[in-house]
Image (cartoon, rainbow, N blue to C red; front, side, top):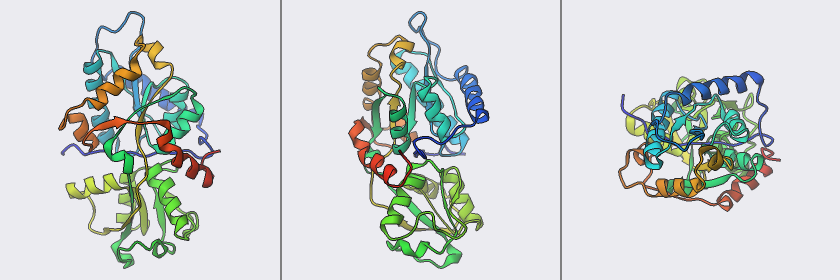
Length: 311
């Protein structure tokens, strides 16, 4: 199997969805196990901790392990630090572990990044991909519906519909926003909307006919289409206007824990200095990384508040 390119997503519900003790403990166990096997052991400053990388789990775990294992190795080599990637169980766990300081550098979607910043004062936006300045989502339908490709989203209203994760920017927040702007109640689908948990799962559920339509990350849609991994029964209905999305966010305690005072600056230089064709860029489906500012996601925060997903 070839390595799949990756996109991302994210977002909160009432600032953060409740995390059960079971979820939190499972995430903590995964964190401890993962940090023992990723990254390159290096001569880190005496008494310092490794840099702990995480990400919202918006795609198949196999895809994410390949991507972030590669990132951990690259950052370890580039910064001469011990680095580990820790997979987490769900979006809320990623935000929780960032808030508690158990994750130092996390690849968040637009809304989960807002969520993490609001809960972790002093968090530092580091970098985003060039494509994240104008990211998009797609709506897909099962061919049996007979719904033709169109910019008119009202045709989706009578269909059984699934989003991705409940806390996804590209799989839930922005599709719901554009539906509402088109006059479609984003919660009013027959039987209520589903939540598949990831972009890949959305494709699978629409392909199986469990749902007649769904929304997902446009980058995942294109990557899976190029791979020939999309069932012919799933067809593109429309693509949304652009919005700002994924980015790296650094925990304010990371510089002290790793013993690297200028950690944010070094990470920015590392990501923005990756040359064209670098394996990390290829896996991220990006041409480059670029600086990102907190204000870049003001619109995401406002839409989250308007939809009742941030308070």
